[in-house]
Amino acid sequence: MHGSERVVHAMQELFAGGADVATFVADPRKLPEELSSRVVRTSKLGRLPGLRPSASSPGRWRYLLPFMPWWFRRLPTDGYDVVLSSSHACALGVRAPRGVPHVAYIHTPIRYVWNADLDQRVPRGARSLARALFTCLRIVDRRASTSPDVLIANSSAVRERIRSVWNRDAAVVHPPTSLESARTRQATRSPDTLLWVHRFVDYKRPLEVAQAFELLPDLNLVMVGVGPLSDRVKREAPPNVTVHGWLERDELERLLMSAAGFIHVGLEDFGISMVEALASGTPVLALNQGGALDIVRDGVDGLLIGSARPHEIASAARSMVNREWDPDLLRDRARAFSRERFLHSLRDVLVSQGLS
Image: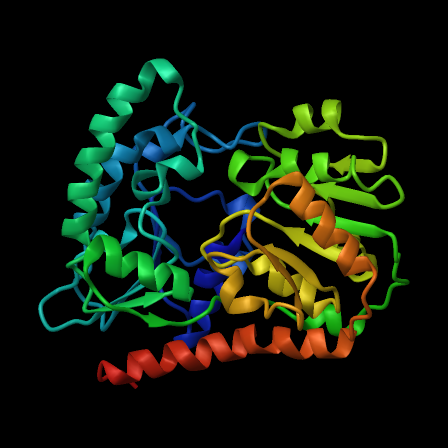
Protein backbone atom coordinates (compact mmCIF):
# COMPACT_ATOMS: atom_id res chain seq x y z
CA MET A 1 0.00 0.00 0.00
CA HIS A 2 2.40 2.64 -1.29
CA GLY A 3 1.85 6.12 -2.72
CA SER A 4 0.17 5.17 -6.00
CA GLU A 5 -2.21 2.77 -4.23
CA ARG A 6 -3.11 5.50 -1.76
CA VAL A 7 -3.94 7.82 -4.64
CA VAL A 8 -6.38 5.31 -6.16
CA HIS A 9 -7.86 4.69 -2.71
CA ALA A 10 -8.49 8.42 -2.27
CA MET A 11 -9.91 8.76 -5.78
CA GLN A 12 -12.75 6.45 -4.79
CA GLU A 13 -14.15 9.23 -2.58
CA LEU A 14 -14.87 11.36 -5.64
CA PHE A 15 -17.60 9.01 -6.82
CA ALA A 16 -20.79 8.05 -5.04
CA GLY A 17 -20.57 4.33 -4.34
CA GLY A 18 -16.99 4.19 -5.58
CA ALA A 19 -15.54 3.57 -9.03
CA ASP A 20 -14.56 0.39 -10.86
CA VAL A 21 -10.81 -0.26 -10.87
CA ALA A 22 -8.88 -2.04 -13.63
CA THR A 23 -5.20 -2.79 -12.98
CA PHE A 24 -2.66 -5.14 -14.51
CA VAL A 25 -2.12 -7.00 -11.24
CA ALA A 26 -3.51 -6.66 -7.71
CA ASP A 27 -2.83 -8.44 -4.43
CA PRO A 28 -6.05 -8.05 -2.38
CA ARG A 29 -4.27 -9.11 0.82
CA LYS A 30 -2.28 -5.90 0.79
CA LEU A 31 -5.15 -3.53 0.02
CA PRO A 32 -7.96 -2.23 2.24
CA GLU A 33 -11.19 -4.09 1.57
CA GLU A 34 -13.01 -1.00 0.29
CA LEU A 35 -10.36 -0.72 -2.46
CA SER A 36 -9.80 -4.40 -3.29
CA SER A 37 -13.57 -4.90 -3.63
CA ARG A 38 -13.63 -2.30 -6.43
CA VAL A 39 -11.06 -4.14 -8.59
CA VAL A 40 -13.16 -5.55 -11.43
CA ARG A 41 -10.46 -6.43 -13.93
CA THR A 42 -6.84 -7.68 -13.83
CA SER A 43 -4.70 -9.31 -16.51
CA LYS A 44 -4.80 -13.06 -17.07
CA LEU A 45 -1.02 -13.08 -17.58
CA GLY A 46 -0.46 -11.45 -14.21
CA ARG A 47 -2.46 -14.20 -12.51
CA LEU A 48 -0.28 -17.06 -13.80
CA PRO A 49 1.51 -19.14 -11.11
CA GLY A 50 5.04 -17.89 -10.54
CA LEU A 51 4.14 -14.45 -11.91
CA ARG A 52 1.33 -13.45 -9.55
CA PRO A 53 2.02 -12.25 -5.99
CA SER A 54 1.86 -14.88 -3.25
CA ALA A 55 2.21 -15.00 0.51
CA SER A 56 5.94 -15.73 0.17
CA SER A 57 6.80 -13.68 -2.94
CA PRO A 58 5.90 -10.33 -4.55
CA GLY A 59 5.69 -12.20 -7.86
CA ARG A 60 7.49 -11.76 -11.16
CA TRP A 61 4.69 -9.93 -12.98
CA ARG A 62 7.00 -6.97 -13.65
CA TYR A 63 8.75 -9.09 -16.31
CA LEU A 64 5.55 -8.69 -18.32
CA LEU A 65 6.23 -4.97 -18.88
CA PRO A 66 6.34 -5.34 -22.70
CA PHE A 67 2.72 -6.61 -22.62
CA MET A 68 1.34 -3.92 -20.31
CA PRO A 69 0.83 -1.09 -22.87
CA TRP A 70 -1.15 -3.49 -25.07
CA TRP A 71 -3.29 -4.64 -22.12
CA PHE A 72 -4.21 -1.10 -21.01
CA ARG A 73 -4.88 0.05 -24.58
CA ARG A 74 -7.42 -2.78 -25.03
CA LEU A 75 -9.28 -2.25 -21.75
CA PRO A 76 -13.05 -2.01 -22.36
CA THR A 77 -14.33 1.38 -21.17
CA ASP A 78 -17.77 1.55 -22.77
CA GLY A 79 -20.58 2.61 -20.46
CA TYR A 80 -18.51 4.87 -18.20
CA ASP A 81 -18.95 8.62 -17.76
CA VAL A 82 -15.25 9.30 -17.12
CA VAL A 83 -11.96 7.44 -17.33
CA LEU A 84 -9.50 8.41 -14.59
CA SER A 85 -6.07 6.80 -14.79
CA SER A 86 -3.32 6.75 -12.18
CA SER A 87 -0.09 6.02 -14.01
CA HIS A 88 3.60 5.59 -13.26
CA ALA A 89 4.10 3.36 -16.31
CA CYS A 90 1.46 2.24 -18.79
CA ALA A 91 -2.00 3.04 -17.39
CA LEU A 92 -2.29 6.38 -19.21
CA GLY A 93 -2.57 4.41 -22.47
CA VAL A 94 -6.16 3.38 -21.70
CA ARG A 95 -8.60 4.64 -24.33
CA ALA A 96 -11.87 6.35 -23.46
CA PRO A 97 -14.89 6.15 -25.78
CA ARG A 98 -15.56 9.14 -28.00
CA GLY A 99 -17.02 12.00 -25.97
CA VAL A 100 -15.90 10.54 -22.61
CA PRO A 101 -13.14 12.53 -20.86
CA HIS A 102 -9.92 10.76 -19.89
CA VAL A 103 -8.07 12.46 -17.03
CA ALA A 104 -4.63 10.99 -16.27
CA TYR A 105 -2.88 11.46 -12.93
CA ILE A 106 0.82 11.01 -13.65
CA HIS A 107 3.25 9.91 -10.94
CA THR A 108 5.99 10.00 -13.58
CA PRO A 109 6.61 9.09 -17.19
CA ILE A 110 8.10 5.58 -17.02
CA ARG A 111 11.05 6.11 -14.66
CA TYR A 112 13.23 3.20 -15.81
CA VAL A 113 12.72 4.10 -19.49
CA TRP A 114 13.34 7.85 -19.36
CA ASN A 115 15.63 7.92 -16.31
CA ALA A 116 17.47 4.62 -16.48
CA ASP A 117 20.52 6.10 -14.71
CA LEU A 118 18.48 6.49 -11.51
CA ASP A 119 18.01 2.77 -10.92
CA GLN A 120 20.48 0.42 -12.58
CA ARG A 121 18.69 -2.90 -12.19
CA VAL A 122 19.72 -4.41 -15.52
CA PRO A 123 22.60 -6.95 -15.43
CA ARG A 124 25.55 -5.91 -17.59
CA GLY A 125 25.09 -8.79 -20.04
CA ALA A 126 21.48 -7.81 -20.74
CA ARG A 127 21.97 -4.07 -21.23
CA SER A 128 22.04 -4.15 -25.05
CA LEU A 129 18.69 -5.92 -25.06
CA ALA A 130 17.37 -3.51 -22.42
CA ARG A 131 18.43 -0.49 -24.50
CA ALA A 132 16.50 -1.85 -27.49
CA LEU A 133 13.45 -2.52 -25.30
CA PHE A 134 13.63 0.95 -23.76
CA THR A 135 13.82 2.55 -27.21
CA CYS A 136 10.61 0.75 -28.20
CA LEU A 137 8.94 1.66 -24.90
CA ARG A 138 9.77 5.34 -25.36
CA ILE A 139 7.95 5.28 -28.70
CA VAL A 140 4.99 3.48 -27.11
CA ASP A 141 5.00 5.86 -24.14
CA ARG A 142 4.96 8.97 -26.31
CA ARG A 143 2.04 7.55 -28.27
CA ALA A 144 0.17 6.69 -25.05
CA SER A 145 0.70 10.24 -23.75
CA THR A 146 -1.64 11.54 -26.46
CA SER A 147 -4.56 9.47 -25.13
CA PRO A 148 -5.61 11.58 -22.08
CA ASP A 149 -7.57 14.78 -22.54
CA VAL A 150 -6.03 16.22 -19.37
CA LEU A 151 -2.76 15.44 -17.62
CA ILE A 152 -2.17 16.01 -13.90
CA ALA A 153 1.35 15.80 -12.46
CA ASN A 154 1.97 14.85 -8.84
CA SER A 155 4.72 17.48 -8.48
CA SER A 156 6.36 20.38 -10.26
CA ALA A 157 9.34 18.12 -11.09
CA VAL A 158 7.05 15.62 -12.83
CA ARG A 159 5.34 18.46 -14.68
CA GLU A 160 8.72 19.48 -16.11
CA ARG A 161 9.47 15.85 -17.00
CA ILE A 162 6.14 15.62 -18.84
CA ARG A 163 6.99 18.76 -20.81
CA SER A 164 10.42 17.38 -21.65
CA VAL A 165 9.51 13.86 -22.81
CA TRP A 166 5.89 14.23 -23.98
CA ASN A 167 5.81 17.91 -25.01
CA ARG A 168 2.56 18.42 -23.09
CA ASP A 169 1.59 20.57 -20.11
CA ALA A 170 -0.02 19.35 -16.91
CA ALA A 171 -1.70 20.76 -13.84
CA VAL A 172 0.00 19.96 -10.52
CA VAL A 173 -2.00 18.22 -7.79
CA HIS A 174 0.08 16.81 -4.97
CA PRO A 175 -0.82 13.29 -3.81
CA PRO A 176 -2.78 12.79 -0.58
CA THR A 177 -1.12 12.21 2.76
CA SER A 178 -2.95 10.92 5.82
CA LEU A 179 -2.25 13.25 8.73
CA GLU A 180 -4.77 12.10 11.31
CA SER A 181 -2.66 9.74 13.43
CA ALA A 182 0.18 12.24 13.73
CA ARG A 183 -2.23 14.79 15.23
CA THR A 184 -3.33 12.46 18.02
CA ARG A 185 -0.10 10.66 18.98
CA GLN A 186 2.65 11.90 21.25
CA ALA A 187 6.24 10.71 21.63
CA THR A 188 9.40 11.91 23.38
CA ARG A 189 11.85 13.49 20.97
CA SER A 190 15.36 11.91 20.79
CA PRO A 191 17.69 14.86 20.12
CA ASP A 192 20.58 12.70 18.86
CA THR A 193 18.69 10.23 16.62
CA LEU A 194 17.75 10.66 12.97
CA LEU A 195 15.51 8.46 10.85
CA TRP A 196 15.64 7.05 7.29
CA VAL A 197 12.60 5.10 5.98
CA HIS A 198 12.73 3.87 2.37
CA ARG A 199 13.41 0.89 0.14
CA PHE A 200 17.03 -0.25 0.18
CA VAL A 201 17.74 0.51 -3.49
CA ASP A 202 20.46 2.57 -5.12
CA TYR A 203 18.55 5.76 -5.87
CA LYS A 204 17.36 6.07 -2.25
CA ARG A 205 21.08 6.38 -1.30
CA PRO A 206 21.11 4.07 1.77
CA LEU A 207 24.85 3.36 1.52
CA GLU A 208 25.76 7.05 1.39
CA VAL A 209 23.47 7.85 4.33
CA ALA A 210 24.96 5.05 6.45
CA GLN A 211 28.49 6.14 5.51
CA ALA A 212 27.68 9.70 6.61
CA PHE A 213 27.22 8.50 10.18
CA GLU A 214 30.81 7.27 10.30
CA LEU A 215 31.52 11.02 10.46
CA LEU A 216 28.90 11.49 13.23
CA PRO A 217 29.90 9.07 16.01
CA ASP A 218 27.93 11.00 18.66
CA LEU A 219 24.67 10.77 16.67
CA ASN A 220 22.49 7.75 15.87
CA LEU A 221 20.63 6.72 12.73
CA VAL A 222 17.68 4.35 12.48
CA MET A 223 17.08 2.89 9.00
CA VAL A 224 13.79 1.14 8.17
CA GLY A 225 12.98 -0.74 4.98
CA VAL A 226 13.57 -3.74 2.75
CA GLY A 227 15.33 -4.17 -0.55
CA PRO A 228 18.36 -5.61 -2.34
CA LEU A 229 20.88 -3.39 -0.52
CA SER A 230 19.58 -4.17 2.98
CA ASP A 231 22.14 -6.89 3.79
CA ARG A 232 25.04 -4.83 2.47
CA VAL A 233 24.03 -1.83 4.57
CA LYS A 234 23.82 -4.06 7.65
CA ARG A 235 27.34 -5.38 6.99
CA GLU A 236 28.96 -2.03 6.27
CA ALA A 237 27.08 0.37 8.56
CA PRO A 238 28.94 1.83 11.55
CA PRO A 239 27.86 0.86 15.10
CA ASN A 240 25.69 3.96 15.53
CA VAL A 241 23.38 2.85 12.68
CA THR A 242 20.47 0.48 13.43
CA VAL A 243 18.75 -1.29 10.51
CA HIS A 244 15.18 -2.64 10.69
CA GLY A 245 12.93 -4.34 8.18
CA TRP A 246 9.43 -2.97 7.66
CA LEU A 247 7.71 -2.13 10.94
CA GLU A 248 4.09 -2.01 12.00
CA ARG A 249 2.51 1.38 11.30
CA ASP A 250 2.22 2.31 14.99
CA GLU A 251 5.92 1.72 15.56
CA LEU A 252 6.87 3.65 12.43
CA GLU A 253 4.76 6.62 13.53
CA ARG A 254 6.42 6.54 16.94
CA LEU A 255 9.85 6.69 15.28
CA LEU A 256 8.74 9.56 13.04
CA MET A 257 7.56 11.57 16.02
CA SER A 258 10.59 10.87 18.19
CA ALA A 259 13.35 11.53 15.63
CA ALA A 260 15.36 14.73 15.58
CA GLY A 261 15.25 14.70 11.79
CA PHE A 262 14.15 12.66 8.78
CA ILE A 263 16.65 11.96 5.98
CA HIS A 264 15.44 11.69 2.39
CA VAL A 265 18.25 12.19 -0.14
CA GLY A 266 16.90 10.17 -3.06
CA LEU A 267 15.66 11.93 -6.19
CA GLU A 268 11.88 11.47 -5.92
CA ASP A 269 8.90 12.25 -8.10
CA PHE A 270 7.16 13.57 -4.97
CA GLY A 271 8.01 11.89 -1.67
CA ILE A 272 5.02 11.24 0.62
CA SER A 273 7.30 10.10 3.44
CA MET A 274 8.68 13.66 3.69
CA VAL A 275 5.17 14.98 4.28
CA GLU A 276 4.54 12.26 6.88
CA ALA A 277 7.67 13.37 8.72
CA LEU A 278 6.55 17.01 8.71
CA ALA A 279 3.10 15.93 9.93
CA SER A 280 4.90 14.31 12.86
CA GLY A 281 6.63 17.59 13.70
CA THR A 282 9.98 16.33 12.38
CA PRO A 283 12.21 18.41 10.05
CA VAL A 284 13.39 16.89 6.76
CA LEU A 285 16.89 16.72 5.30
CA ALA A 286 16.38 16.32 1.55
CA LEU A 287 18.02 16.63 -1.83
CA ASN A 288 17.59 20.00 -3.51
CA GLN A 289 15.91 18.37 -6.51
CA GLY A 290 12.72 16.62 -7.57
CA GLY A 291 9.63 16.44 -5.40
CA ALA A 292 11.41 17.77 -2.33
CA LEU A 293 11.33 21.26 -3.88
CA ASP A 294 7.53 21.28 -3.55
CA ILE A 295 7.62 20.08 0.06
CA VAL A 296 10.65 21.39 1.95
CA ARG A 297 11.46 25.08 2.20
CA ASP A 298 15.16 25.28 3.01
CA GLY A 299 15.71 26.50 6.56
CA VAL A 300 11.96 26.54 7.28
CA ASP A 301 10.75 22.93 7.07
CA GLY A 302 14.19 21.35 7.01
CA LEU A 303 17.43 21.54 5.07
CA LEU A 304 18.13 21.01 1.35
CA ILE A 305 21.52 19.78 0.12
CA GLY A 306 23.08 19.76 -3.32
CA SER A 307 24.24 16.14 -3.43
CA ALA A 308 24.00 12.84 -1.55
CA ARG A 309 27.71 12.62 -0.82
CA PRO A 310 28.33 11.32 2.73
CA HIS A 311 30.22 14.39 3.94
CA GLU A 312 27.43 16.71 2.75
CA ILE A 313 24.77 14.55 4.43
CA ALA A 314 26.82 14.52 7.64
CA SER A 315 27.28 18.29 7.67
CA ALA A 316 23.56 18.91 7.15
CA ALA A 317 22.59 16.31 9.77
CA ARG A 318 24.85 18.06 12.28
CA SER A 319 23.25 21.41 11.47
CA MET A 320 19.77 19.90 11.79
CA VAL A 321 20.24 18.55 15.31
CA ASN A 322 21.91 21.80 16.44
CA ARG A 323 18.91 23.93 15.42
CA GLU A 324 15.59 24.51 17.12
CA TRP A 325 12.55 23.49 15.05
CA ASP A 326 8.94 24.36 15.83
CA PRO A 327 6.90 21.11 15.50
CA ASP A 328 3.64 23.06 15.15
CA LEU A 329 4.97 25.00 12.15
CA LEU A 330 6.15 21.77 10.55
CA ARG A 331 2.71 20.21 11.04
CA ASP A 332 1.10 23.29 9.50
CA ARG A 333 3.27 22.82 6.42
CA ALA A 334 2.13 19.19 6.08
CA ARG A 335 -1.52 20.29 5.91
CA ALA A 336 -0.83 21.73 2.44
CA PHE A 337 -0.66 18.10 1.25
CA SER A 338 -3.75 16.72 2.97
CA ARG A 339 -6.17 14.20 1.52
CA GLU A 340 -8.89 16.86 1.59
CA ARG A 341 -6.84 19.25 -0.53
CA PHE A 342 -6.02 16.49 -3.02
CA LEU A 343 -9.71 15.62 -3.45
CA HIS A 344 -10.74 19.27 -3.77
CA SER A 345 -8.12 19.94 -6.47
CA LEU A 346 -8.90 16.76 -8.40
CA ARG A 347 -12.63 17.48 -8.24
CA ASP A 348 -11.97 20.92 -9.76
CA VAL A 349 -10.22 19.28 -12.70
CA LEU A 350 -13.13 16.89 -13.26
CA VAL A 351 -15.63 19.76 -13.08
CA SER A 352 -13.60 21.61 -15.71
CA GLN A 353 -14.26 18.63 -18.00
CA GLY A 354 -18.02 19.04 -17.61
CA LEU A 355 -18.47 16.48 -14.82
CA SER A 356 -20.43 17.29 -11.69
